[in-house]
Length: 314
Image (cartoon, rainbow, N blue to C red; front, side, top):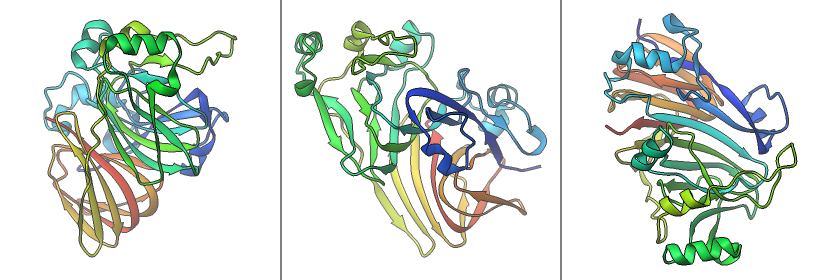
C-alpha cells in the first residue's frame, strides 16, 4: 500500500533548553528540552514509524532494508536529519567538520546545516561567522578570549533563513525557536561555552584544536530565497545543493504536488489540514513530521498549512 511514513521521534534535554516545544503538542518530560529530532535515522535519536505496514519500525532499519522507499539510494546511511530546537539560552559557539574530516576523525559524516527561524524574541541574535583573517589571528583571539571582536552577531526574526555550511562559526541565541535541516551527523566542536558548567559543576569540554582545523575564513555566504506563487501555494526555495534542497510550502487551499525527488521529508510548523495520498486522507497538523516515499508520485494538501520540506542531494 502506498502511504506516507508518519514518525514518532526523540526529545533531548539540553543545558540551554526550555519548554517551548510543548506548543507543537509534544509531551515534555522536563523544562530543559532543547531538541526534537523529528526525522532521524542517527543512532543518537532514531525516529519510529507510527502508521501502516511499517509501524513500529526504526527509520534506520527501514532505510537499510527497504531502499526502494528511498529511491534505491546508494548512500550508506539515511543522509538527512530534521530537528526543532528551543534555545532558552545561548548554545555554545561551535563549528562542524566537512565529510572528509568528520569521517577521518569521528567516523561519521560532516555537518552542513541550515536554519529556518520559527520564532524569535525581540532583539534575539545568532552568531554567524567570525572576523579573524587567518589561523594565527583566530588562535590568538580564542586564547585571549576576545569574543567581542572575534564573533559576528546577527539579529533575527521569524521567517529568516540561514545556510550554515561545515566550517562556519555559529551559535543560536537565547529566545529562538528553529527548524534545522542537516546532514545526519552529531559531531560538534565547541569553541566557547560562556564558561558554563554542567550538572556536576564541570566546565563543558571545548575542542579548540579541531575547531581551528576546520573553521572557514571570510563571511558566510547565505542563500537568496526564490518565491513562486499560485492561488493556493506560496513556495519558497531556500537552498539546493549536493547536501539538501529545502523549501517552505505555505498552503491556503487545495494544492497538488508531483514528485520531483526520490523522497521528501516534511514538517508541519503551523496550521492543520488534510494530506491525500493514493485515495487515502491523512489529517495533518502543527508538530507532525512525515516522509513521502519514492512510491508516492503525487499528493494533495487541503487546508491552511505551513511546512518545511526537504530532500537529500544526490
